[in-house]
Image 1 (cartoon, helix red, strand yellow):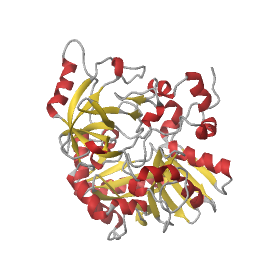
Image 2: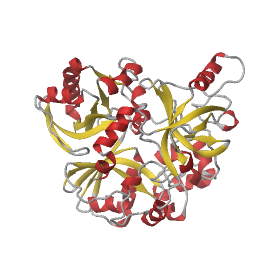
Image 3: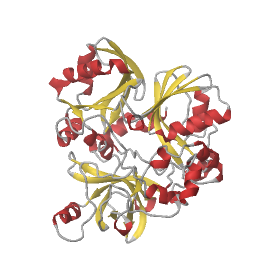
Image 4: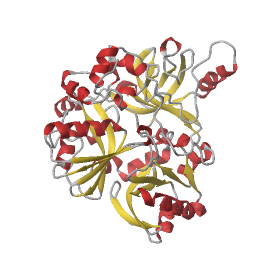
Length: 466
C-alpha cells in the first residue's frame, strides 16, 4: 500500500512503536568520511592529548532561513532566549512540541541580519519549515540535505570541519599565519586559510578548545589540506566515522532524542505534512526499554540537560507545559560507567556455544537510530540510557543516561540492561541474543575530567544559550 504522509503510515501500521521497532534503518549514518584514518583508539586519544580534525561535511542537514521573520520564527519555536542574538553568534537551538517534549536540537548560526542556518539531524528543520509554511512567516528556505538522503554525486553548499584539542589554537594560528582572536564561546569570526575566507565558530568538544570552520563547498579540499599540513607538527589526527560518533560519550551530549511528534491531535496536521519516507518515518528504535506507548519515549529539555536553555522571556510552542515542568524536573542526565567484569562477561559470550548476549561494537555500540536501554535500581526502572560505547581515553564502556532524580548521586549503583526483549527484532542490525544485566556506577556528565573542568571555567550553559 502506498501512503501519502506519515499520519497515513502510522494508521496503516497501527502503532508508532511497532513502525520504529521494525524499521530496516540502522544507526545514524556518518557517510563518505573513511571509518578510520589511522585507528580509532589513537583518533580518540587525539582529541584529549593533541588535536583532531573532524570532517562534518556530510552527515548533517543544513537549512538556510532567509527573510525579515527569520529570527521571529525561530524565537516562536525555540526554548532559547534571543536577547542579544545577532550576526556572528550561534546557539544550540531546542524545539519542543505543544506539551513541552523535545522534537530535536540543532546548532543555529546567524550569518546575516536576515539569514540564519540550522545544522543537525533533520527533525528540527522539518518542524521549522512546516510552521513557516503554515503560519505565514515572511521567510524562504534553502535546504542542503545530508549525504544519506541524496542520490548521485555529493555536492553541498558548504563544507564543515572542526579543529579540536589541546593544540587546536596552535594549529589555527599556524594555518592562518596570525594570532587566534580571543572571542567568546559560540561566537564567530573570520579567517583566511589557503587563500580562502573561512568562517569560524568558537567551539569545544570533550572539554577541549577549538573552532568549527565552514565555507563554500568548492574551497573545502584546499582548506582541509592546509589544516592537515599545518597540524602535522602538533600531532593533528584526522578522525574517521568510527571514532567521531563516540566523542559524545566523553562530552555528554545526547545526539538522538525521539522526535516527540508521533502522537497528539495538535501534531496531527504536522504528521500529515511529513512524508511517509522521511527521517521520522524510517528512523529505527532499539534497545531494552520497551513500551507500547510512544509517549514513554519522549524527553523533556530537563531530561537532556537543557534546563538552563529554557527561558520564559518570550512566547514559544510548549512554553506553558515547560513552566509546569520547570518547578519539579523528573529526571537528570548522567554518565554511567559500566562494570568492567560484566562487560567482559558479555563480550565472552561471543566465543561460547549456546546463547550469547547482544554484540558490543567498538567504539560506538549504538545499533539503532534512536537507542533506548532501560536502567534499573533494585530491580525497578530508574531511567533510560540512550547512547553507549567505549572510550579508549577513559578505558571504560560508558553510557549517557537520564535517571529519576533520586538515583542521580555520583557513586550510586544501578543496572544497565543490554539487549532487546524476546531476543531480537526485525532490524537487520540485531542478531538473535539474550538480554543481560550489567552493573554500572552513576558518574558525572561530562565524564572526562578535562571536559567537566572546561564546562565550569567557560560557563557553557550561559554561553550556549546567549
